[in-house]
Length: 311
View 1: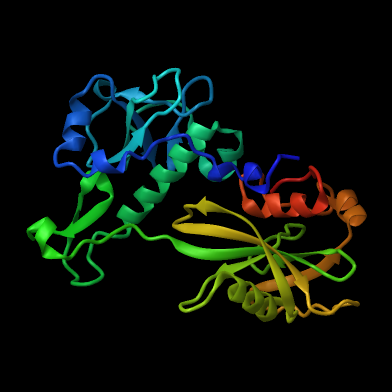
View 2: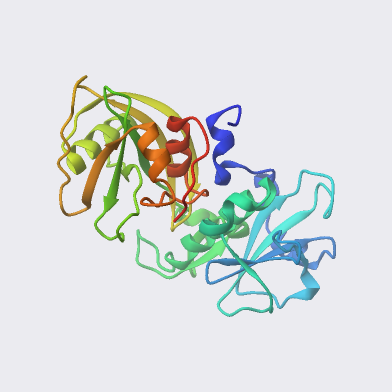
């Protein structure tokens, strides 16, 4: 197992310097696009263009048409190709400008390098935000990108003095492995999932609610079980479309046998699993979450090792 839980979270890895001071400068995007040393990651329909070696392709600007949405992602920090300090932009296209292989972050995130996983998560999260932020939630006015793609402003306003900046948002969600007094793990099947697919419980944090309170509320709502102690494990961005998943291990208040009552709407089935039962079922009668997800990391953290069987 990795030295720490966070080391097992594929999308929590990143080596890119987001270079926030430089990206805010007026003209930073134009300067970067004109620089032959700049490299560009390409996104179309939520997928990123890959190089022949499977890594994300980082292309020179003259290999691409300038897109309508261009984003300043940061600078590389590792020596290699491209060298450390290289500016990396994100180019978002409605139609693929290139022929080749495209990576899916949900499916491929665990196989990417730390640089590529962090870059892809940043690019996809930003692109998803721009896609749904064409109008200001404050004024209803159309908005345009600014500050390297990290802010949107109402069109036609004096951008900096208007006070109408719209910033990217991230929705916090808790995800929890629930363990009973016999040290068994709760796995459940969502009502929208096919047979055999299971995972740990999760839910969004509500206004005015702490992460720990959200854990206790969600478990009670979904399976009618009360949990007490909540151990924080780690967090990971999940830009599908705009979440950060905050992981916990929670323990039931009761020490003995704890009955499960799935709510029947969101959760269709739920049961407790011992390590021996889960090892036997994983990959045969059960399909576990993919290795890019924090859900898989929580399950294997509790289990103490690697399990078979992906979605």
